[in-house]
Length: 311
Image (cartoon, rainbow, N blue to C red; front, side, top):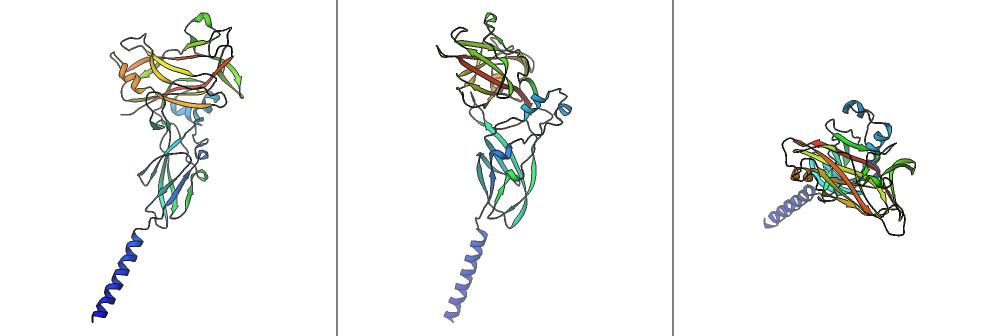
């Protein structure tokens, strides 16, 4: 009798153990996100109609030109975190070949005073129905998401230097020290040249840009290729001292490749606004200095200020 009881207990134990192993199968699906996933991922074919704008072709192309470095991944409304691209994101709880909802939110680091990672808030969310199978890798670049700009995104300042410049030097007698349109790398960009004959430093002012105050996200985006560091600050018409230049941040020299950088203007605006109303006029200031005895080039392109309401 004891032998039978021992046998039954052993069989039950093995059965429970096998069942437990089956329930705790941790074989994941991997979601592979590469830089190619977000190449040309924004559709701007109807942008002018949906935003009541008259952007030219060069501006529309600039709206698509982003360098997303991170991605926030959601599967079936579950947040799987923020990942640096390229990445392979493990997904648990997938049995067999399941149809799942995948959301990829392209993101980038905010430079200057914030040092955080933002999901780009100006695009509508793209939800994809995809088949995920346990033990396999889903390649996102084979079925890349497509995005459109939110109808609520606004661009109060957008400069591609196609044929003119809105910037002015602080000292109008130094007119050569300005971002002047030139053809470079196959497109028009703003270029400033410093040499011993022109001076070794510059301060360039944008026109006054209307910016919202309150529950908005306001972003400054700049594409650059420079041979010297550049500092950025901003004056505000509604600040307690409208002549004060509030620091935004800056970027180091990048003489060999084009880079894109983003600055959060939200806190600078809200923390220094000192007047009635929900808007201010901001003036961007680019400052820098070259090296004595050397010709230094500052090249800047696709300068955008964009905002969207958050509440």
